[in-house]
Image 1 (cartoon, rainbow, N blue to C red):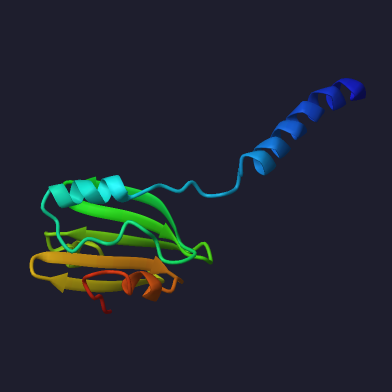
Image 2: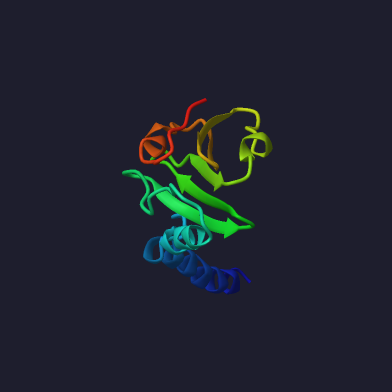
Length: 134
C-alpha cells in the first residue's frame, strides 16, 4: 500500500515542481495594454496613459468597456494599483475602500482616478498626462 502511494505521489510532485520552475507558476500574468488604449483612443478618449508601466511595475489587466478605461498594475512590492479614466464623472462613483489611497485628476471632460492599497502611486502619477492629486 505504501509503495502504491509513493508511486502515485512522485508524478504529482514532479508536475508541481515543473509548473513552478519551468513555467513560472507563481508569477503574475502580464498583459500588453496597447490594444486597449488604442480602443479607448478610437472611441474618443484623450490624454491617455502611456502603454508602458513605470520601472519595475507590471500591467496585469487592461479593459475598455462602456467608455471607461481600466488598467491594473502591480508595483515592485506586488501591491495592486488601478487606473480608471473616463469622460463621465467617475470621481463620484470610484470611491476608495478602507485603507486605499485615491488620487483624482481632471482635464477638460476627462477624469482619471488612481486607487491603491498601501502602494506608492507617485511613479504612475508622474507618467500621466493628466495630473492627479488627493
